[in-house]
Length: 486
Image (cartoon, rainbow, N blue to C red; front, side):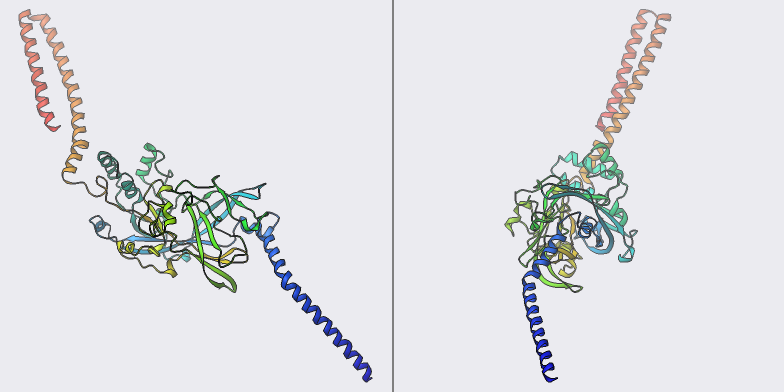
């Protein structure tokens, strides 16, 4: 019995030994093979392929909810600004909109690329907002102030005419409208006038609004790599609207279309990796850099942020010289792709900008937590877990002689004389001459008839001389009365 138990124990020991050895071997194999298997699965699920039902559906119709939070700087002292005081603003918002993205016109090409247009729609979310779309705010009038700067170098007479046009349509330097009107458009007689008589001057017809062109629109025709031949190229842009480079900027480097379309990136990222992407709204390629590791609901991530040099000017950061003409660091001049209107992009509250910009506006308080731009990426898959793209739209305000401000003094006199008095005088003159001519003709006919009936040739000659003298006096009186006005 003892021998039997010993034999059984020996067999068990051998069994445990074999199992242990197999576990060690299997574990060792997995150490090398496991990552390969996982990476292979990541590659299969990352490639843009209609046969990958789950990943393709996620790429085509992004299931993750995106939200656009809009803040307005309500101008508190519009009248004082016109007299030279600094703008004083208060931040209003957020007004939150759920953004729905859907890719359409999807076409795969033999060179392992795919083309598509991504359409976007926005829906107001009252429960997430700090106000309603019916809230009224005052902001600079982009039509008037933008046109003033754009026409600064045009002849003075033309600027006066433009100023008269603005005044005719009751358009001033500032607008007071509801959030809904400012976002999605409001009826403007000035816009209707410009679209009718100067077609092509404005980017769109119909209502004028800050985001009127965004809703129910697409971001252009993107052609990106599927990653089928090289997973390192997946999601990278091959062309945009058929272009492999832009023409907005001054150097080939600035005009390059780099990185992805800004939604996903190639997998297997490291801390040395960057996040380049092309933004049609910013009219250029941008690049984020690694900041720190982190977690999002237990999932590891890398946080990438905007470097301080992103919107630096060409003096502080020479590689950005191609994006000039520049102003203070922290402002990106996008006028070249915004119909030459004086529009600039920056971080909110001039975060990471030249400190002197903060001195130009009262009411700004920049800090990284609220105004920094970042993207949290799962490094193994290149999928964003948390995205916060924070940008501020700025308009250059400048006093332009002949357009902005009130017209007074000699300018007002000249303006009134040339555009009010003279047209009125000319109108009365034309009717006066017509009336005078008709009266003269009638008198001549009547006199002529009487002469034939009752007077001699001598009397006829005398009367004609009197008539001519009376006509001369009438014309002289008209000239003396009218021409001093000219």
